[in-house]
Length: 77
Image 1 (cartoon, one colour):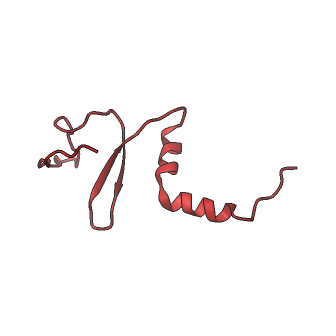
Image 2 (cartoon, helix red, strand yellow; image 1 turned 90 degrees about the vertical axis):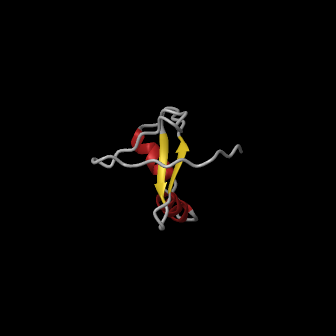
């Protein structure tokens, strides 16, 4: 993984951020860590709606789904 130097970016009055200097992709999944760190990951969408992509990226939801799925599957009628 190539690492580059950090640059300072600022939010505008409407809390928007321009990624002109650093962004190479058109879509990102962004998550905020507890300490306020924002992590931007390039998003590739293949037939998913934006909602579906957000659900799949949400670790809490996915963990709950995995827990529910363990041993509690009911056969389809």
